[in-house]
Image 1 (cartoon, rainbow, N blue to C red):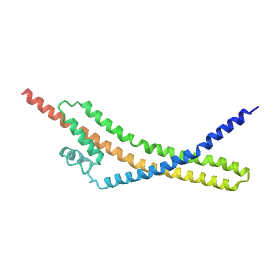
Image 2 (cartoon, rainbow, N blue to C red):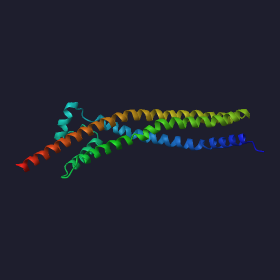
Image 3 (cartoon, rainbow, N blue to C red):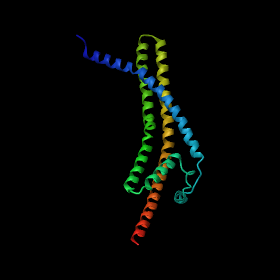
Image 4 (cartoon, helix red, strand yellow):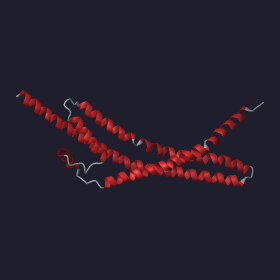
Length: 212
């Protein structure tokens, strides 16, 4: 009669062993992904380095005169263009502008999800890629197969290093880019508030003219 405990151990061992190559494949894909993201990160960093500095108290006047494009990132400038196109409509409602702001902010935060996942997933995959060959390596050690043990240990340690390296790079990118997102959202909120104030002044002037 087959031992249920031995059957379960064999089943778990097969599952664990079958995960090694998918884990190695995913780690390789994550390496390419983090390299590609490093390129886009560098591009955005260069863009922000070239932006003109401006005191916070002068930003409202720059936005009102329309000379703030050199101060803000391309995301904020694109949002301002969409905001003006929305706020200049004859039947615009405050709720439409507010929805535009919230949707833009949501998209910015959603763009951070990939990095947040990498921060956690890459070290976890590295740990999985470490433990699986360690098990087969110990089994090889029991059989006196030192060659397989050496090969498994190399795989175990390299997957750990790769996973931690990806996680560290992703955490660095996430920390810096989160600050950029918060800055962009602050500027979007300022632009929205000024646009709505300008729209209210126009509506008030039109209403006063019609009343007179």
